[in-house]
Length: 111
Image: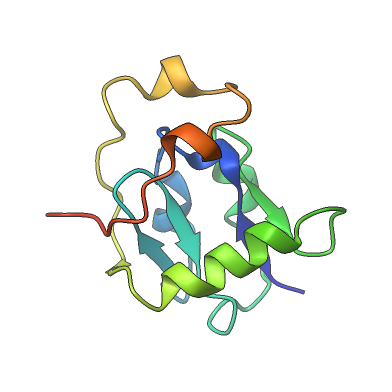
């Protein structure tokens, strides 16, 4: 088992999870984070830290799409080891459903 960042992270990107990860397995896109599944040690400390409830175990139903997206983008986005600021409008996007189609960005974070 590993953990996966799901659609709830899109445009929220709170990054509380990054602070607690003991192995630095988070990677940052323009408007969401992903977890590298081969680096995740399945400790689960990130899951309760996410205010948007965007982190789930890969054993949940219908999670395959998100597991693959995490794997793919962890290979091209930069690793993140410190919490950054959430987007100014993160609270407006928290809880919004079906964000992937119209709001997911495949671009890496620019810092």
